Length: 296
Image 1 (spheres, rainbow, N blue to C red):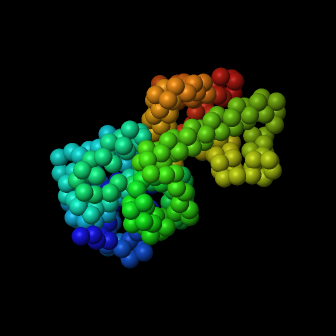
Image 2 (image 1 turned 120 degrees about the vertical axis):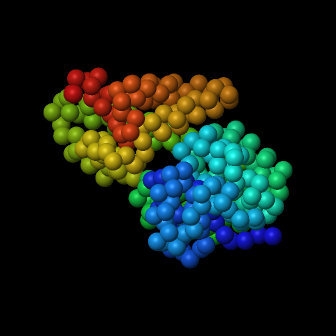
Image 3 (image 1 turned 135 degrees about the vertical axis):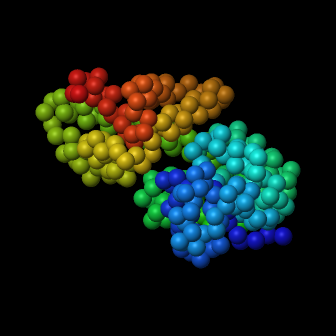
């Protein structure tokens, strides 16, 4: 037995607008958040409110998780009152968090043993993109899971890109992308420091490159944020960036892939965390570059 009921677990800066878009589309949605007060705000939008992860899902239904890390994902899936057994035969778990490929493999196997499906579907895009249903979604898993998830993912994003049957593959793609974004942030921070030290306006530099040879959202949006040092409120917290870089390095070590640039980015993030900047946007690593150049 299957049903279109959706349990949405994780109502942070990304999960909240995603859940609201599902509610706006007319779907039956029950939400769960570790802090219940956050979930209660969704009752006005027509959502059911659950006290436990299991309470958010129904047998044969769909669970969507958008959580901060592997531990949180495993807790709501496998912990006390977790969703795994409640979801049951015919259920589908769409994991949209940035987590380790090994965690996805583990959860996919447990869901298969329980008669349910598992799909890795992490996203690219900041909270404003989530609110506008403009996320880029990468997916991997069984064809049955993809077919059932397609209509839902179409509501949440502007495009779905498939990376095969291995549930870990989409997580590798997501980690690769986040590594590339952070590398671009470091590049822009260093370039802007070089310009500023030579009397060139940082904002003008960012605007020029964002309109010409680097005319893409990463350089346009992050370039402006770095130039303005608009690191609060955080669209993606620096401390979460460190979590992702740790995952990148773990995957690289397992695959025996040297990534010296990832090591540099790890050091930038570690220095930033030591300076109590974990709640800033991850573009805040620019402050370390500025300090190294005696600009702060």
